[in-house]
Length: 449
Ligand code: NDP
Ligand code: 2IT
Image (tube, rainbow, N blue to C red; front, side):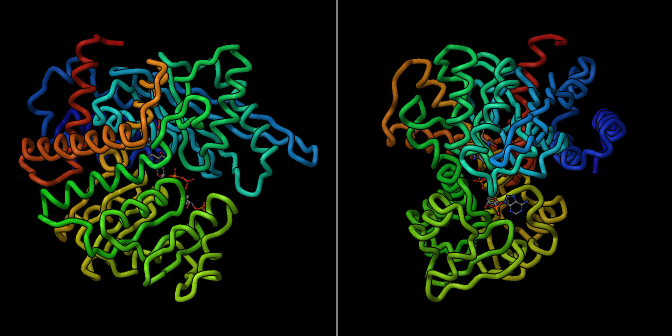
């Protein structure tokens, strides 16, 4: 509950203005509840209208994306780029192509990205973009024409010192390639650092593909060690989703000694008591772009269950939600608690509803918010920008080692802030406060802009 008058007033303004943007309101509320613990020490923030400015994107771009499908029919999608906050660096954040995309989702993701990017300690502001285009079931040629049309508008708003997009749901190596090609054609510049997540032959960084999932495990291992004196060794793990983040999270869990027994897509989940065979899963998802149910057809001893939310009923020690926002509700959280789960570390952005977070925390489970534990993706995007700027590329191990160090530092920053706030081990409060303080400091120093 909000008690501070300044926080209450600004939240009420946001609620009045953006009443229909439920995901955005949810993200702002969570952060404001954490800021209760530091706001009294900073009366200068109110005088400078800091929170009013913080919740308002610096710029929001919405545009038409017309394209022609393989049957010659003209289609029109909606494109967005929310350039949220550039206090500590150029806007940075992914592009999401998914039919559910709307302004509320873009704003919640951009808002979260400000704090996440701050936590990485790299000089990146926050932004997000995307479209309600659904790449599923489209041919490569259709995806290419869509990406070209999308970039035909976006190119005038981005640049390595302005705004640097990357991938997110529905935007992987294929889409980034098409987007980069069109940017280059329109500007006649090989401006490598304008997009991250590029292919390795044209300026991409080794380990960027793996970075979010690997980083999630590095962060979680740190939390398990320091807060529970344990590790992944021998643990049973459930990972929701089966996209980029989920795949490489599952791979690293295995390397660290855990066993992933369930994974999902938006239709349902697979359960494999022997541990998910990642060779089969990667082939289904990366090469065939097929449904996860195919796994149960091909791997003996595994089963497929309709309905992705049921995955939280699978007994596990550690849960990694890596699919999408609000994918775990109170029922899912309660099922984890009842089955003796010890930790929930988020790979997706805001995958737990507020009710689910409360159940997890009130029952003493370890919990980390995505803005801390999934920051390895954007951190490695930052490393990709560095390599582009110095015109060098580092080895896989060099990037991976830097990523590991960054995730350890993020854990420490969150933990230290949780202690300073009188809530030791509350990594949600720690992430929100540590991420915010740096941005607030930079905004205060730069005046009312
Ligand atoms: P992908 O598109 O590679 O995979 C998304 C996965 O989530 C798919 O398995 C998809 O299933 C499932 N999914 C998507 N929407 C829903 C939904 N509404 N309900 C249930 N399942 C759903 O995306 P990523 O792996 O890149 O992203 C996953 C999450 O991680 C997102 O929240 C993203 O914002 C976050 N993230 C991504 C980063 C990155 O570097 N890629 C960095 C940090 C966070 P289906 O195929 O059936 O749609
Ligand atoms: O949510 C995220 O952090 C991402 N989708 C990655 C953003 C990036 O710029 O690499």
